Amino acid sequence: MGYLPKKHTYRKVSRLLLPHARMTATVQKWLCAALAAVSLTMLTSCQLQQGHHSAGNGAALAQPEPLAVSGLEPASLSGPLQAPRQAPGISPELTLIPEQNFWREMRRGFSLDHGLHQARVQQELRWLKRHPHYLPRLQQRIQKYLPYIHAEVIRRDMPAELALLPIVESALDPYAFSHGGAAGLWQFIPATGKRFGLPRNWWYDGRRDPVLATQAALTYLQYLENRFDDWYLALAGYNAGEGNVKRALKRANGDRDFFHLRLPRETSAYVPRLLALAAVVADPDAYGLSLPDITPELQFATIDTEGQYDLMKAAEVLEVELDHLYQWNPALNQWSTPPEGPHRLHVPVAMADDAQSRLSAVPNQERVNWLRIKIKNGDTLSQIARRHNTDMATLRKANNLRGSSIRAGQALLIPRSSQAMSNYPIASQQKRGDYQVKPGDSLWSVANAHQVSVRSLVKANQIGPKEVLRVGQRLDIPGTATRSSRDMIRKVRYGVRRGDSLARIASKFNVAIRDIARWNELRVDRYLQPGQSLLLYVNVAAAE
Image (tube, rainbow, N blue to C red; front, side):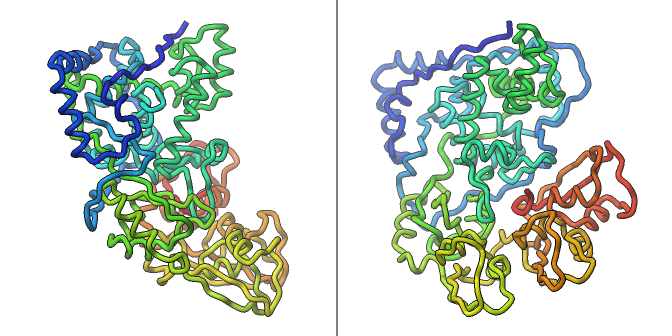
């Protein structure tokens, strides 16, 4: 039988006293000091609990894959957003960690066997030792996201090692994007994200929301652990899918040891990768490594926008750079918060209360501009939506439309950005123009002629991918990613599969055929070979 980790039980006195407190850092420090002063014995007892795992030795193996399994290169993040003025308190959904040494606090919650006797774990440890700067290089991202993720893992009474999983998944890059279409810190594919309640639309991608995606990922992991009754198998199911784990268990004829199961190659390395990372956190000195300096305080809080909010106006009200607001809210794709919600913004924790009062003080009618237009002959709802940087669902709701039919002379209300789209750094695409369909045209020929993907053409015009075009029909031609969206561009290595073509790959990642050819020095008239590796530069907001 495989190792079955015991359920983690959290016993810290101060955490029990302060599970959901809204307190300033000063009050927390005072209370911790008071608890320590009550009894020297209690303080000594706390120190004695700070045990660690010892290192083991294994046989030499070939170099493993890099720790960031998404195949993306870590990119630096900017420093913390400066608050216009200090204000105490944080969002009630975020819990503070009353511990001055974050890594020591994390070790206290470790409950998994790190499998140091396993060759695959030793293989991953050797990779980490050969790359001593990997974790220090992620210091800004770890500080930004890990205290929150760790607090949520502990709140759910889960093994603290699971808080390290987004380092394995994405190197804690909220814009990470894999060749399989997985996105965000926790690398949700679209289907699994939808299954666990992550909204994904033109305005917003919940897979990139650090709060929503963390809640969904932990719920999924708890579900998998309940199903397999083993955290190793739960982690394998998170990576490979529960169906693959179930079939592997069936083939094993009762052997539930993860290390004995026949699983996909990536999954066989995935769990050891997490265990090796946890072993380093448990005892970095044993491996000659150092951990980045991390403070336990949460870095961001969530505030209620009470509805749709133009992000330019929000930045002005909060007296912060718009770029910084986007960096704290990586799930946002467009110029405003999503009309249908979630109606919230993440901001630095120090300015949370002040930000809430400032945004709430703005009258509803001033948070988003509305434009009234008169429909002209030949207009379609999709063209109007594209022209005014909104989506059809928003137009239908704002104007009480049941379908997409509109008529000339009819008036429409349209949400409108307060400034030109070029002033919004996250704006992923700009309208290039429109095109009138000619005899013999198809979606593929029009997309190829304008160097855009079929998928982007379909998406821009809200039509089916197999729809026959009508002569005289007008199509919106989407533009390519602008320089202002460089922070959402990610490098992806894609392995060509049987049946792939440049057109199919371009459609999958919403890039132009000629761009793929240029990035890889290919001729567009040459066939691709299975196993061939392609370099792609994918705009995360525009990719499907």
